Image 1: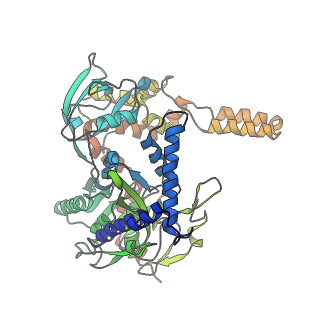
Image 2: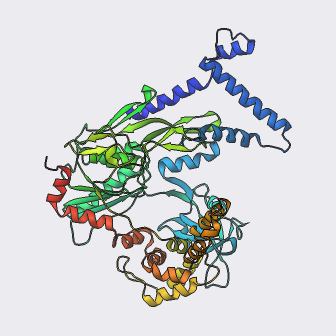
Image 3: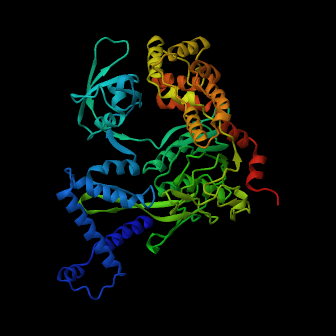
Length: 571
């Protein structure tokens, strides 16, 4: 509550600076500005506002083509914010839904994900269990022809996604083409308030007393969802360890991380300090409740997509030697945003401070205040070993370096994804195959046991061996550019043969790569099939069965001595 008050006060402060006082306005109108110098911040502000207003006026009146005033000022705002950092954004009153989605994880819609289909169509890729689309009978693989009577047979994903959204309790009508059916499917149902669940899956790992909780985001429901998940795990067994999965979690509300850390750290423990240019946005975050699981062994999973609030949570546990961090180095977002009310219902989200975790480290990787000649941001941390960066120390004296992000205590090398698996996962032909599979098989094995047979996989290979399956690699494109550079620099006569040989080696071969990288492609196919039977829970169960990070965490948690030695190494 204290921090919310600080942020609210900061919003008022911003507004008081943003608008000149009435006395200043009067002096400007009368021309009595002698007391102001050209360096005066108020004068600079007025000059900027007046110039911006005149610019919009003249463009609106005289530009060769007609212009929208709203588009002009929106583009002007975007231009201002683009010179700061990518987290500064303006939301008009009409765009408030997007901001609500960030903070609450809620939006008005149907609970479905769409993707490009054949011939510029858009198809349903996934429906979420218990949401309006699934309850009304929408299925993955359905091609969207009309929404509320409007033709979307030739459209794009963004347009269809926007049309599916709307006010909760407002009726939506869909006309769908369903594979295997000769007539269109017509559905009518109500949109609902869709809540993006912060915790999509939790369980007790098989044959163990190790709990697993996956946190996808930090919205205003995360703490209550985590508390409920942890309570249910404790009812199932006497936990001997807990895995908190923050991989792919891009962050969210900082207060929610505090609520989770309350379980594992003593009351009053510092977890982060916010340091801004204005003291009113500088504060210290501490745990504010008695811990429930002070001695439960914890492993936190991170990767390159773990960012912001997720890094704060992982970093606080690491600096207090309260959890072992497993995986790969995190993203490196150590800056904090707040929102401020703007005129006419608009809102501004902008960066006000950097956060430092208990050891004093700031995890920020990119310095947005320093840009190269072409306007690109510069990395705060140069590409050099972590050991060459400034050293900080955890509570027990372990060395941690300020190298942009959280470095894991145990690093697990990630499997490199091959291009063919991306192309298969994004192809409508995969959805068609999964739809046909679902029609032929009323049931399948449990998610952690399901696997595609060799014969079934071979059928997929044959289906994808058609021109409609686009498989285009980037390496031949870059090779052709290199050939052009070599020619312009006079090297092509000697290198022509090498280029020709390399061109043949890099030529895409669908059937070869579908068989060469069979294991990765099979994962995508199996997930498309499983989602039609078991929804999101099934997908996660299927992925966990061969998850190297989870396997590493499990081995660590069943070995108390190794766990202790990592957190409290002998000196």
